[in-house]
Length: 193
Image (cartoon, rainbow, N blue to C red; front, top):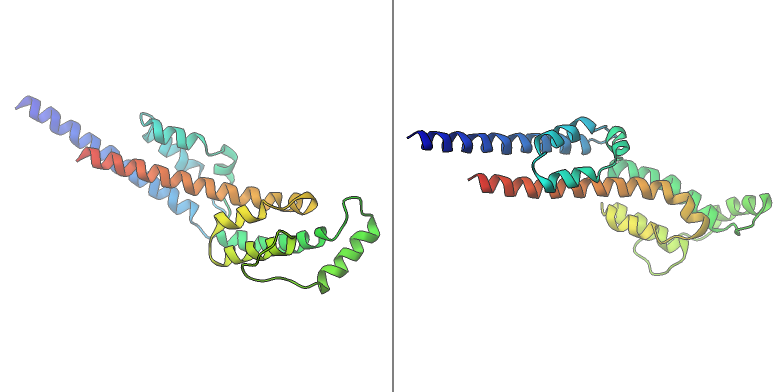
């Protein structure tokens, strides 16, 4: 009878730990899915405290940069809005030669206003085609493919897009970490049963 009581108490403890892990994960998801940039360092710390014995969760949490957790990540909506500005800057930069002077920059501003723009999922490796495909993917809420497309840029256009690409990668990495933790939490819950 005593052994049965001890086993039952251990089972209840495991159940409580699994429930706490799910609650902490839900708090992290809520912080990350806000429509604006929201810090989630407290939620990460809570998950670290609860899962110190779980090697998978600990490893995944260690991949999230502290500065990202402190500052939060941009939402897909914020990234889409920012892309509109980045797109215009990239378009202008694509018309300037690598060693272009002030006159080249002024000319690129004028030309970028009157040049033909591509829309939708179009073929090609030129800057306009890449920008069109990125916009297409963002309209489809496919941040992963939008980031992959924009990462294909070269030279000055890529330099101008690097901050956006970094923000998008941070968003994708945090979302992927949450998916892995969720899978691990599911496995932990099943093993408790």
